[in-house]
Length: 372
Image (cartoon, rainbow, N blue to C red; front, side, top):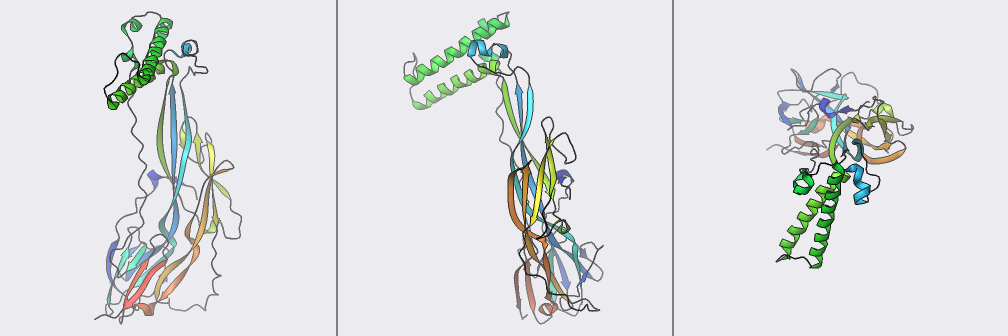
């Protein structure tokens, strides 16, 4: 399945919605295909989840702007190889993967109601996944917080540190020569200050540090006239990838798929944009579950109960060319099985509490108590 960018992905994580319902022996279960989750005239419809990969890609944009005195960098500052043309480039600096649940359209079930039985509460997520029955303080999976880049320091105009003699020069070469001399004077003053030989020594360590910081600031600002200014900006791109159970099996050899591409001129681009170098994703089914039992003879009427997942596992690897840059194992319900909890657990003689793992739909808690 082709990954999509975060602006196309629905905002489905929200607080669970509580429904007051009543079961007929836990409700007759039927697998559906075209129903929306929630309440119906006959009962309720819910999904079980499957795993989606939320992939956070941090891309660093580097921009270089040459200084006005770049041609004189070697002559006056003995700096070789200083670029004299502006440039821009992108690189991937980090990739993080998180497993999050999405509804599995192949695992949608209904519950029929009967007003003569004990009332129960079904808790669904905003997108219709079953979270719990008769439970309080039910939680859903949380989307990781977005990346926040560190604030950039404002650029200082180096001309504010130039003397009147420098600014009055009509020749760029002469301005470069005098600016280089000013830089060497700053460095000499810094050295004398550290050695304790300056004409005006600070009274304490704090004042000393302030003076050193100011000398460094002026040195960097004037040096940028020769060496240029390089700025870095980090951008987070969030991709979603949903492994399909039909794509691979525990015995099949996994295939790699283009996840995204990185262009040196445009940054991260879509997987089908050939202007960028490809980054691949490989999903392996590493499930180790016992083989399912042979199916019993099909009944005319659906068996009553509640379905839960017995999840499998997957390993997702992201590669830059042939080099792995991120790999992670995580649960994957789409590579597992489903089991039916018998409807006898939900009859009117008991109040049954059921809690599912919001990520996998697996059973976390099941207990029953007799109503008073």
